[in-house]
Image (cartoon, rainbow, N blue to C red):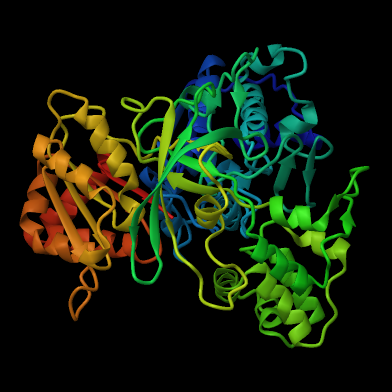
Length: 626
């Protein structure tokens, strides 16, 4: 019966109001699951549950990692599953969805026949694997014989409008199934979705035939999350500003950034290899931006002139050519586009495909033909756009035509930096801690795109385009007496500076332990004098610094954790929250593995596993990694 009702509700791509009410024992369970890195998917999921409740439809809300796939299989015939999930980094599952995905993707995962589902995916089209987490979950559910009741919708950075459409569409659809009044039918003129858009199909949305994916029209941009967000959906909105004299709230994004004045730039440390750590202060007065410790700020940089020159040379262009998009009457010089608009560090998958077509015997072509994700990812990680274009000339191929090249270029990515201040002491400024290092001689790009932009081409008094990336998944405890353990080597200590100064404003801050690190003692530790002051006042209880290269063997933060294993476990048993910030590829996994090893070694496998599960269940483990 439920199958027939849902399928009839989608008949001919339209929502058909059902006359049969399903209530009591016949009513399906509606489960709303989310996977979020910085809170956006959670906000959307919360709004979906709220709107379903207003329609009289009861729904449960849970993080994906809290949902057992076996349980879904046991209750498949009675369950409607609505998934909202963001993508982290280059196509990875967000924290909060990784364990669910491991179970779902297992070759022995249970059959899900009878389960009805729909997926909303949040992502960033400037990344190679746009909305990959949502795509994988959507396709895997279908592989396990679950039935899609609405096509997947992939939302780019300015996701609010399209997510709201999807929420209204699902409420309208389930109102028909449950035989209750559709609250979306009374939406203000101009806001209600069309019948077709509600179903997530055809004209109002663009869909690939048989692909199960739709992409609503509207304002699209770069969702930093895949590593970030534009902020501001539902009750968690913190990315909006009133703007001086503005009649309506302003939503800042990559397309509409706030121009913050750089008011301070201070070199904190510099090592023998030229690696530097800088402290920046940006004035956000009049923006209406309300940040919290743990949030990040997205900076929209310009490309280095040397990188632009390398790009033009590799592309066989002078820079004076005018490129006019098909949907525009006006064009821009290619040099301007390469400086202000195009991403030159990370080549797009489309660019790799175009180069592969022109160089069938190249390494790129081999990876593209084989759909070798590891090979493609490896190339993108180690080669810039100019490097990729040089493959053409090195193998005797002609440069790509301007139209082909422009179509394969992606908007310049915003770079997100953890905020190193608290509004309790700096309500009108945002502090950033940024590391910059020169690339090797001969590299197409002289250094990091945004770090070099801030260090070399922005002066105090200049304006920097930026916007807030709220991160409700990385917060200092609401109770200041809760113990905290913070692990942040290098500039990973940035948010913890904000945490500690935030707690310093309270009367009774709880114990706080910071693990950080740098290469050599002579390099110095960023904000060392401040941390000494916080130690003296009792806001910071312990400071352990790993100097990785001051001895024959390497010493990292995880080694200091092991050296203090029993004390660390005691803190966790007393309710401490555990935070990691910094490198996602090596440091964070090593620290995570070391934590698990330490706990099980000190307490034994069974008791240790119980404590780790308790920490996760109580949401006392947090990561902000990149």
